[in-house]
Image 1 (cartoon, rainbow, N blue to C red):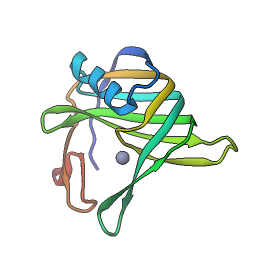
Image 2 (image 1 turned 120 degrees about the vertical axis):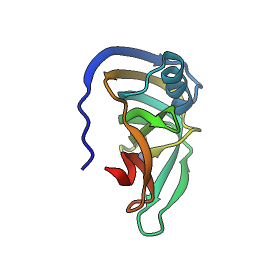
Image 3 (image 1 turned 45 degrees about the horizontal axis):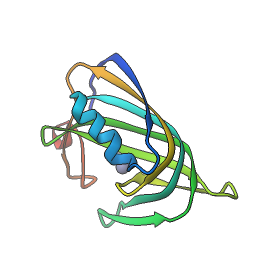
Image 4 (image 1 turned 45 degrees about the vertical axis):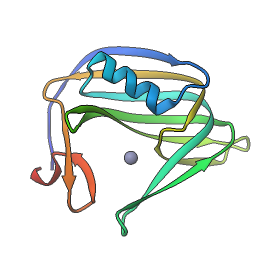
Length: 145
Ligand code: ZN
């Protein structure tokens, strides 16, 4: 098991502009602020969602789009290091006009209608994403965990 003890740092509250790209906007904020470790949460609404599902057997992503207005029921994520740069990883649950759920890993191409974001910085040794053979993903500590 990978373990790393960090300490809460400053908290940033962001309201993203309508029409902005959810992943790109939060990712750019983290990079510009030099944030290398943080937790992220958000709620609001999007005009469309570009999502991704990871096939655990094939070790491949499957991308799909929900091309309609959606509520963001709950969004969670983190910022850690990948290839020496801050990397934003975000998942979210969405609801349509009937309350039906959609969700998954959030890709670029998810367009904001209105979004309130909380970024909680973490101070200490930033986790580094490295290849993990068992999952085929870049995970904290990689195979060396
Ligand atoms: Zn993911």
